[in-house]
Every structure is written in structure tokens, then in C-alpha cells.
Image 1 (cartoon, rainbow over the protein chains, first blue to last red):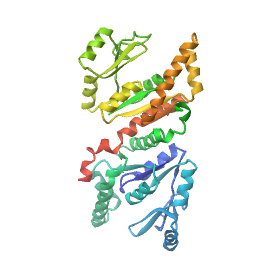
Image 2: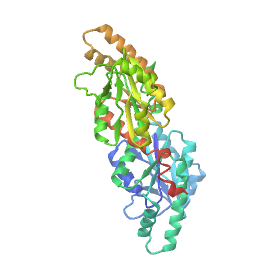
Image 3: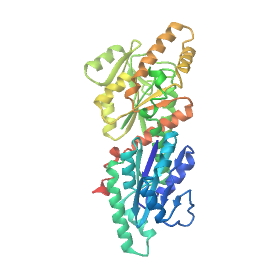
Image 4: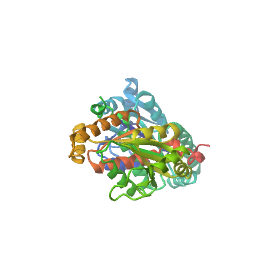
Amino acid sequence: MYIVVSAPSGSGKTSILREVLKQCPNIHFSVSYTTRPPRQGEEDGKDYYFVSEEAFRERIARGEFAEWEENYGCLYGTSAKTMKAFLEKGFDLILDLDSRGAKTLKKNYPGGAFVFILPPSIGELKKRLKRREFENEQTVNKRMDKALDEIREIVWYDYIIINDKIKNAIDALRSIYLAEKSRRERLMNKIKDFIK
Amino acid sequence: MYIVVSAPSGSGKTSILREVLKQCPNIHFSVSYTTRPPRQGEEDGKDYYFVSEEAFRERIARGEFAEWEENYGCLYGTSAKTMKAFLEKGFDLILDLDSRGAKTLKKNYPGGAFVFILPPSIGELKKRLKRREFENEQTVNKRMDKALDEIREIVWYDYIIINDKIKNAIDALRSIYLAEKSRRERLMNKIKDFIK
């Protein structure tokens, strides 16, 4: 099974994901391809596969992506082959995607769980974006509009985590994973001896 | 919101419930009415409300039960008034019911989550029932048939917990509770500022 996590920037998603992956060694993180240059501390093959735009466009042309999209001029995509291989082996996969990528997977890969992480309030979201982009109010406003656009997609997600305390948000995401693993429709094969 | 937990005897349900209630002080346990005499250590008002058959039948006649049923000659029922009061106050409620009671609530009280706890295997179930009823093979067989009948109802439950390790089973039930609290449809009121 797979879990998609979406969130506007400033929601604390990255820290939450990192901790849940540490606590749940059975979940694999889906490493996306991107044309964005690596940020400090990011590792190729661990955070992203960093590729040139040409290489990325070739992969699009060959139909190699389960989903892809452009964001602030950079391309991001998920390898369909890797995703299928993981799911066929029965592995659990967590993907960090925006709502467009999430929507594409929901349509094409049944059985996923979709989680949206929110900052505690609109005021807090704006404060966090300002802290990141303190040099430029126009950028903050643009990012704020984009965040609110993204949040409007929340209406078709399965779960919402309001990140007011990071410890609780981590616990919630881990719980969603464990609960999804306990859903009856995922276990019918394991219990068939009981109901024949 | 409310969670119903069902399980055949020998599944470890009581220990799991007790520990989850300890870990989650926000969940209230729904105390059932019963005509069964108290077992050793059971407290009136905590484990059950112990009442006479006459008193129980009067409550049935007055339509006071959200669900009730007979089990091995004893009557068991959930007070509709208490249940409604808890849910209206926004409290979370956990109910320990057999599949008949669970089905009645599913029909009449929307928004519940239904969890079925299973022993790890049919062999293990038989072993545990034998341990309890070692004096009488006929009783064991009767209980076994009843357990298997009960388990066949699993097909309409939302979640299944296979109790092979009690620690994991407790973690699973607690996770189901936390995940259900994070379901988008339960949180629409909390996030309305973000999407207006």
C-alpha cells in the first residue's frame, strides 16, 4: 500500500516524514526525480534523483512517470517502474507530493491513503512563510496565495493532520499508517481461513 | 465519534481494551447493562450495570436501549440516552459489543468505526478456548462453533486486528482511534477557515 502526504510549505511536513520513516522501518520513501538543484544537505538518490531538464523530458517522452508536474519552474516526477515494483512486492511506500501529483496517483493507482498536513492556522502559516522569505513581501504573498490554492484541494483527501504540536503530528501520521494496514479490505487474504 | 470492538472469546479483547483506555484518557468506555451475575473482580457501574431480568425487560419496553441482545441466556444492552449524550458532547466512546449489537449501531448511529479482533489462527483459538473450558469438550466445541459464526460477520467491519502480539494489537487499536480522529470528514469544521 502507499500513503501520499501533501502540505503547503511551512507546514512542517519534512520533519514529520523524516521522523515517521525513522519509527517505521517497513515504510519506504519514494524518491522523486527533479530538475531542481540540490539544496544544502540534500543527497542524490536519498532526497531526490537530481537530473537535467533534458534527461527529465526524455523520461516524460518515454512515459516513465507515474505522475509529474512543474513547480516554480522546476520539474518533479515519480518513477512508475519503481512504484509498481514496490507495490507488487507488498512493500509500503510513502510519497511526498503536491495535490496535482497526488490526484494523478489517486486516479491511476487504487488503494492509496491521502494525507494532508496543515499548519495550525492561516495566521501561523503566514508567519512561517514570512520567516522563510523575510526579504520580500511580494514573494510571501505569492507563496501564501499558492499555499491557500493548494489547501483548497484538501476536500478530496482521506486524512488531515493539523500540525500544532510536532509530536502529535508524527503520532497521527504513524497511526494513519498502522490503521490503514488494519483495514479489513487489505487483510481479506490473511483471514480467509477463518471465514471459509 | 465512537468505536465498536467485537471479538470471539479467547481473542484477548478485554486486555487490549483495558490498556487502550489507559493510554487514551479521552476515550470513554460505554458501560453496558446486563442480567449476567458479576464475575470476580467486576464492579457495578464500571464493567457493567448489573440489573435484574425484570428491570432489563422494563428498559426494553420503554425503548431505552440503542441495542440489546441475548447471549447464553443473559441479556446485554447499551443505553441510548447515555450514548447520545456522549456523542452530542463530542466525546469519544468505545463499545465492547458482539456483531449483532455492532450491526444495530452501524444502522442507527452513523459515523462509527467497527473493529474486529481475531486470534492469530483457528488452531490458537481452539487452544485458548480449551484452556478456559478444560473440563468439557462439548462446551469447547459449542463455543468454537459460536466463535466461528461470530467471525463470519467480519466481512462488514472496517478494521481487523490479528492479536498475535498483545503489544502490537494495543498499538493497532490506539492507532485506529487516532487515525479515525484525523479523517477529513470529521475535521471539516476545524478547517473551514482555510477553504472559505
